Image 1 (cartoon, rainbow, N blue to C red):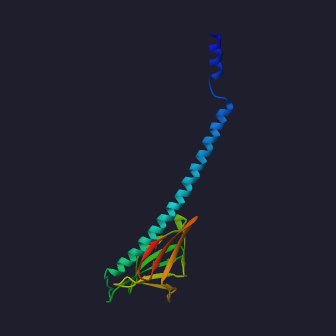
Image 2 (cartoon, helix red, strand yellow; image 1 turned 180 degrees about the horizontal axis):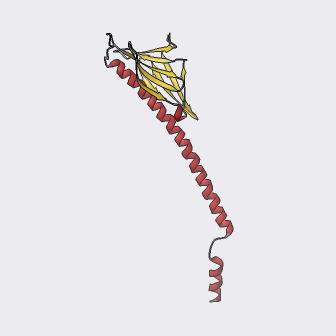
Image 3 (cartoon, one colour; image 1 turned 90 degrees about the vertical axis):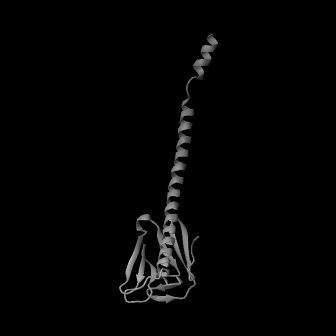
Length: 166
């Protein structure tokens, strides 16, 4: 009986080293989880911004091919203009109308366009694309909008009207 009491007394509870080791391991796992969650959130914001840009470009393209006419006659063309961190979808008629504005500032995502462009214009009816920099036509077959927040996503548009995220 004395032997049984001796075994029970020595095996009850955890040692201080076991408790500290458990707390350290839990802290490491929690830290890794938080870091993964933060990185995943930034990637999701970036992907969301890329999909929004793709949707906006397709929206402008669809408006151009819908056969919308201008008040004073003729078919309306639509454009997507990038100024600073803002993308503006506009109808090209007299007077010009803004159809949609999307601001990337709050999302923390930055945007750049290669080659240097300020406007992508969709022609009426065909939806073909023309590229402009400050009102001057740029001779290129495609443009890439690079969205960056840590990593980057590209939205590429070709002169035939194809819009892809890569």
